[in-house]
Image 1 (cartoon, rainbow, N blue to C red):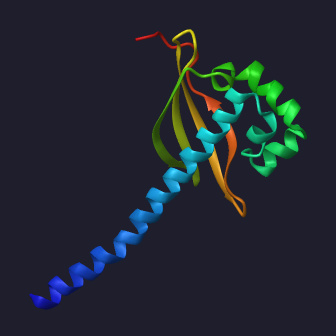
Image 2 (cartoon, rainbow, N blue to C red):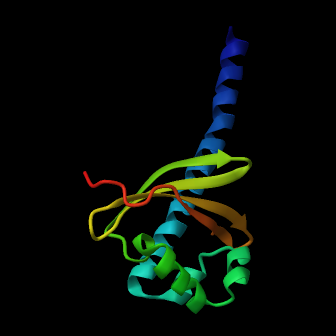
Length: 137
């Protein structure tokens, strides 16, 4: 019985760093998205572009082209009224953070942010709009 209790305690202690690191990862991921949206709100395209993955940066080539794409394709992200972070999921080996954004007109949008870990930390690798102009509450 004593051996079982000792083994149970060891297993529980081994799980703590995993939970703590997962929690730290989750916080880091939502922090990156938050910082990019804050940069959009300030009109700071350069700072927002810095949160994009190397693949996205290579695709757009400049913060100006990236900002123009976000303003035209994702206006709810460019100037949101409210942002809520929902679940972080693993899909086909990739991490996707679900985000609910309310635009200034009160419309609710669900988006998935694909996150990748780089040598410089977590970066946004893709954003997928799941709903467009959902009814207001």
